[in-house]
Length: 145
Ligand code: HEC
Image (tube, rainbow, N blue to C red; front, side, top):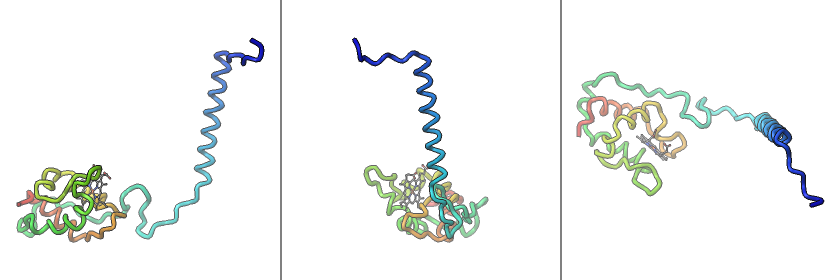
């Protein structure tokens, strides 16, 4: 049996684990310290979240203008700014192509527009504040068909 490695005792094994942990913590710190500072973004946003400035206003009541809206008024904005991704692709986000698609998810659709997480900032679509406000008005007024 000569030459066979001597099995580590329990305390020796623990020590090895400790120093491995210490080493990886150290490595993480070094990596964090060395990553280049992110350049400031023109809109003041940060990577990973939505834009820091979201000036969309969630209506607190149904306005007269909102009450005059029906789905035909907001469908073009959904088609242009949402359905280009939300069209039911396998593995993609659920569709937002029809009235029912939208109203089945009215609450979460409202939230995503109101907090500017949708459409994604880098989604290749430039939805105006007016389009967002109109959708929010329409939702606030009970999304008439
Ligand atoms: C560039 C592609 C793209 C566009 C444009 C887009 N979405 Fe999305 N959306 C996604 C993807 C991908 C997901 C699923 C992954 C995620 O939650 O980020 C998603 C998820 C969502 C969710 C679920 C979020 C959650 O918290 O689970 C909502 C609601 C939503 N989208 C609404 C919209 C609305 C409304 C629009 C248009 C105003 C829109 N999206 C435009 C790609 C897009």
